[in-house]
Length: 236
Image 1 (cartoon, one colour):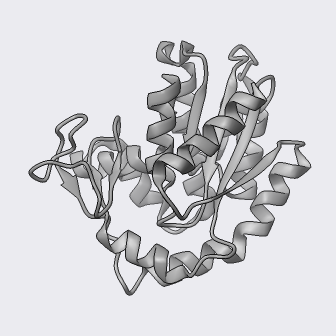
Image 2 (image 1 turned 45 degrees about the horizontal axis):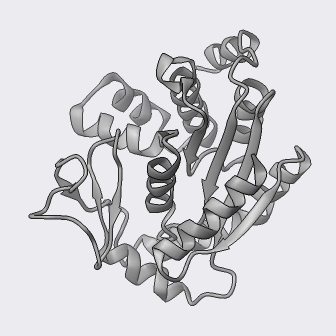
């Protein structure tokens, strides 16, 4: 795995020359929703490694076996997600005007891999959906009520005010599922883990001179989308 990653980096080129929007934030902050809305407004390619791996698990594909082999090894998981993103970048469909990365990269190792093979030569805009002044119970409540489209190509999230119909995504008509980790036992730990790692993540981006924009994740999703669009349009 490690050798393959180094091979990809060594053979990477800066042929993409396009804006890349990275959206990160704590669980339940609406990253998937805002990434999908951004895709709809800009008609850019949306890449979500987590959605792709979830879809692979449902289908029992080779990627699912690789994810299982990676286990809890953070470096192995970073390398696997890097391969997914890098391969999609090389596909013809990424000839769109820009790319949106949903929840990746968000570790020092992953950011380093992305910088060498994907970020270099492109304009990167990092948006953090922040909860600095928000009651975490709001995020927990939001996560427990949400459903997500099981299709990796869609991956839209639907909350209690969702636009779903008859248990299906109204955009691609795939079934809606509940993320296994969206439960009262695991969610608080996931939120705490993100908060503990957040400063290190943001510092990695700033070290690379990548602008970091904070957007409050609580409120009307259309208003949040409007703020993100203003940031993107003002940066490209």
